[in-house]
Structures are given as C-alpha cells and as structure tokens.
Image 1: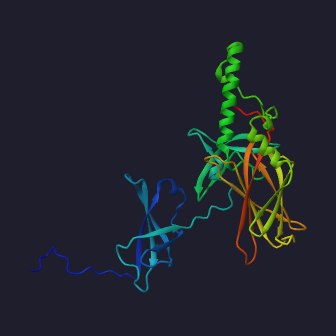
Image 2 (image 1 turned 90 degrees about the horizontal axis):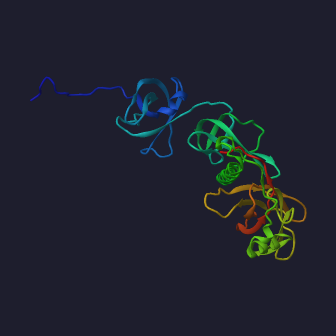
Image 3 (image 1 turned 120 degrees about the vertical axis):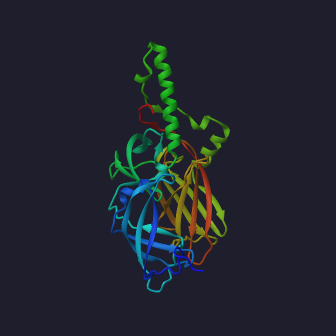
Amino acid sequence: LVKPEMTLYAIADLSTVWVQAEVFEYEMPFVQVGQQGNLTLAAYPGETFQGEITFIYPYLNQEARTNTVRLVFKNPKLRLKPDMYGTVQIQVNRGRKLVVPEEAVLDSGTRQVVYVVRGEGMFEPRQVTLGPKVGGYYEIVEGLALDERIATSGTFLLDSESKLMASSNMMGALGMGGIKMEQAHMGKMDMEGMDMDRKAPEMAAANKSSAGMIEKKVGNLRLAFSTEPSPPRMGENRIQVTVNDAAGEPVSNAKVQLTFTMPMPGMVPATVSMAAGKSGRYEAKVNLGMAGQWDLTIVIQRPGKPEMKETFSVMAGGRKMSGMSGM
C-alpha cells in the first residue's frame, strides 16, 4: 500500500556532484570561493578528482571546530557516488614566505624563540611572530631576516643553558645587594675555562683520538677521518674524509654525506653533502653548536655498490657564548 508521505523515487542529476569538506577553524582565513580542490577516495586508489569551492557555510561546527565548504566536481562517468567518503586537499597560493623548520622554534606557551647564529659558537635568542604551519615548517611573520642563520637542532639545550646561567646570575646579584629579580640579566657564558681534557678520563681519550687522523676499515673501503681545527671546537669546523678502496686507490666517484648529532635524547640529526676533492678526499663545513661529544656518521654511496657508513665520535671543545637575556 502506497501512502502519500512515502518516497517512491529519488531523482537526481549525478553528472555534477557536491562534496562537503570540513576545514579546521584556523585554516579558514586561507580558504576562498573559487579555489581548486583535489579529491581522493579509497574506492579509487591513485586517482585524483579536481573540483572547485563554490560555497562556504557561514557557521562553525561547535563540537569539531570546523567549517563546512562545498566543492563541485564533474562526474561524467558517474563514478562519484552519494555518501562516499574521501579526502580533499585545497590548493592555497601563499606566495614566497620566510619559513623555518618546526624543530628550530622553542615555544614557551607565551612566546616563540629561535636562536640566531652569530658565529664563533655564539647564539642570540630572538623572539619571533609565527604564521601558519605548513608541513614541517612555520612561517615567520616578524623577528627574522632572510639571510640570518639559525640553530635547527639542540635549541632546548641552548635554552636550558641560558636559564641556568640566568638563575646563577640572579642568585649572585641578590646576595651582593638585594637587586630585584626582574633587574637581573644574564652575563656572558664563558666556556673557554672548561678544560675538556681534564673533565674525565674518557673525555681525554676522546680528545686524543680526535686530535689527529682516524683511520678505519669499512667493508672493502679504507677511511681516513680528520677535522680542522683538531681537535674540533664549538662553532664552525671543517670535516674531511679520504676514501680509498682495498687496493689503496682513491675513490672519487662516490656521493658522500655527513650526518652529525649529539648522543642525547631530543637531538635532531643534521645532514650535509660532502664536496669531492682530489685523491678521494671529501669535505664539508659543519657548525657544532655545543661543547661535548658529537657523533659524525659518514655515508658513502657508489654506483652499483652497497651503501657504506661509519660513525666517528669526537669531543668538541668550548668557546664563549654571547650574553643572552634571561628567558
């Protein structure tokens, strides 16, 4: 029995379909009508459908804190079915922006800081204003210039050192005259006075091994590793490695990379390419941002040969670090 309120047929033209996408609230300033969007579906792996934003709903989803936008897609073969779920990527042209890796930013919750390299192992803490995060990078709105170099790993160590020195300075100031804590500021952190060779026997041994050339055999290769200065110091150093085959002939057709990090939790390794020179010698300049042990891994790739890698541990001596305002 057919009743008046029953639906007998649902008639729709599916040659063009709507897709409603949920966009996070913080992303809405970059979304506009007319932008292109790419749709991917689990039903059609490896395929992308292109559409256009035609309407932005004027209200938010209060629970999810998202805004619904409507995209229109052409569907001549009727492959897009009602009630399918997919993922939409909206193409946003932000132009050329200054960005930094997310690990370079130290976020205290009230302000964001990056450490600007001043050379000779000196760093300046610089407060910055961040824009949106895209991939693994933050846009810098204010506080940093295009040609400035920054520390991209170990920033938590720099922050810890600055806070430790600030606390020491404030305690000394209070003991000598009752200076208010807000007036105390950080002085210079002099690391030249730290004799790394006399800290512990293992440190002395590490410095001794890095004072000259270190030779190792890796598979059928012979590596001769050295640093300039020797032993290395906090700041810029030249790392050199000479690669010879089992017969003692130089290997000059390799692609050699250097990865360096400190052996402690939270350190993000940095990787640089080593430039090829004469007689199988490869070299690169690296900035060792802190005094202490560094692990430098040489990775060698040759056409038609298995990849070879070897790690050399060195002890970087200290230098002076510039005065930094209390964090």
